[in-house]
Amino acid sequence: MARTLIFLAFLIALSVVSALARTHPTHESTVLHVSSALSATEGLFSGDAHERKQKQKHRRGGNVEEFADSGLRFELHSRHSVRRSSARDYSELTLSRLARDSARVEAIQRRVDLVNLGIMEADLTPLDTGIMDEKLQGPVTSGTSQGSGEYFCRVGIGNPPTPSYLVLDTGSDVNWIQCAPCGDCYQQADPIYDPSLSSSFARLTCGTPQCQSLDVSECTNDTCLYEVSYGDGSYTVGDFVTETISFGGSDKVDNVAIGCGHNNEGLFVGAAGLLGLGGGPLSFPSQIKASSFSYCLVDRDSDTASTLEFNSEIPNDAIKAPLLHNPKVNTYYFVGLDGISVGGQQLPIPPETFAVNENGRGGVIIDSGTAVTRLPTTAYNTMRDAFKAGTSSLPSANSVALFDTCYNLSSMKSVQVPTVSFHFSNGNELKLPAKNYVIPVDSSGTFCFAFAPTASSLGIIGNVQQQGTRVSYDLANSLVGLSPNKC
Image (cartoon, rainbow, N blue to C red):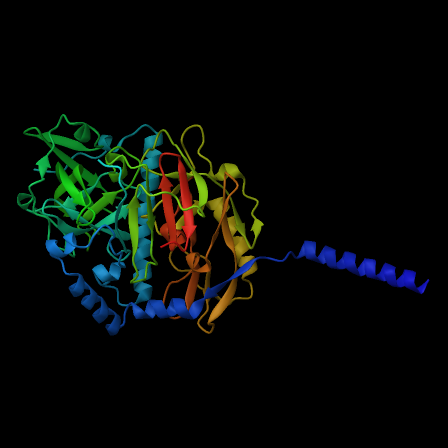
């Protein structure tokens, strides 16, 4: 009898524990290294860091001969290696980054909305003005503080090549560079490209397919003129031409259609122009008929380097997701996102929230130029509330700009935070490192949850969430591969 009572008591206790476990499930967590993140923010504004970057710049040099000897593989540098930020501290730097990011997101969403309404950019903006298969690689530089550009690629323009930093942008198709003579040019890190010194420079006539593919163009004396404007008020206007783009001493691509901008205005400070990696016919991958390309975006506050590569295979261990075709918008890369997990628990967000509908609206794009991932408001609120529930023990802080969930971690060296994962429509899952979604916004210990809501139906996976991950676009097979720690 006694044994029976003991056994019954054991069963009752076991059932109580199981019920409690179901009521309070164990959540997955990961470590956020607070002290190392804060050290990086402080190092950006130290005199020693600036002196070290200047020495690196002088060692790199800027002449054509040194560029030509660098070989196939380029170093990738942080934006601060290109040009030091003018911000007084990390808090000011964060606010300027977020303001530029909001302008970019609004521009992307406005463009997609207009296209869905059947309105092209050329209908709105009048022009204001009075190939190869082998693997190629180039350098990618973290360039968030350099105006509108988040990351920079090091290339050579012309023959002989003029070394130049170009903004790397999967949300743009038209390649362009500042050209002498300048009617209005902003300051850049390298000497301005002079087409009169290049033997490979050639203007495009108005009837060429390249000119006909421009959204906004005009013809003067049978010379094709282009204009590209951006959401923050930046623009470039000039001749549409073909030129040679070099990726090291032995690798080059001839007859690439690029804008030769004689009037350029805006926030592209530091970079000489832009390398468009979008899906349209004028983008660099399209022009060289690349079957794939990949990049790894180094930490936005880092001096380390990585590469931009063309015609390289997706790594075998990459987490693959489908690239979706939106027939109305060919520039952007839509990805098949199905859901999101926080703390190992998939959130009750309907998959339709992230889908492109029959009218071409909605969906989620992956973008190198947007910093902070945007989610439709209902999805974001669900995600944020789950994350806040898993961080209720952390001291809160005031919101910062578009970040509404922030913490005061000034007294901590490391903390546990819930894991965050993306679930793709093919069943694969990408777990993000904590530093890619809880980020410092000052040097005093304020960290924020680095996602934001949008009233638009279009979601965007930004580069903060891509940092440290090699992102491979398999254009031939409509796949994107994500390889953490493959820079």
